[in-house]
Image 1 (cartoon, rainbow, N blue to C red):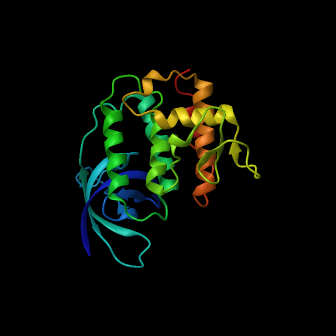
Image 2: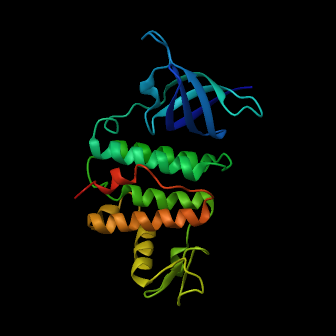
Image 3: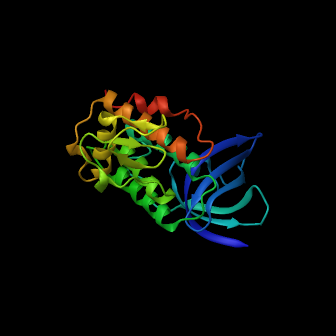
Length: 241
């Protein structure tokens, strides 16, 4: 079945001498892995530049049931970036978030809401000129809403702990080890109140930002099966000294 859909590049792996395996987050089909034979000349339509992390594409897929790798018939840039592919800090964020999305989207059903949130967030980052140091924190926490475990910030009261297993704030520490004490729980509450337009008002040091990244990843590991160590984590840790 031929399917035309919008897609976001999450991962690109070399396979053999002239083949790529591309993992795409698509609007209509969810996560799709495709095999691409790369042309040996510059005349081919499908070039490696199309498959950089978080690139926004319009694709045509030949979808077959029970086939692990689908066939990519055509791909073109949907919206060209103005800065995401050239600014080092934004490139670091893109690499990190593409890996993050790959791990947390595996096994998820197609979600137009999640796709549009991710797409709009990428475009916001590409268009921003400054004040985006907290972008990845807000983005990661907001994605949890589409997977089903975003906490309710209205339940938070100063001094609460955060029960990570049950995704809720509690007055006293639960009877299991997967919780955050009051100080770290306050970071979660603050993060949930941020959005892209207001996040620059919350001044965080690099060490505070990295601590929050660790908390969010630990939270995802409790709720997303087989969420592994992230290789790009070291990249995002070094941003904004």
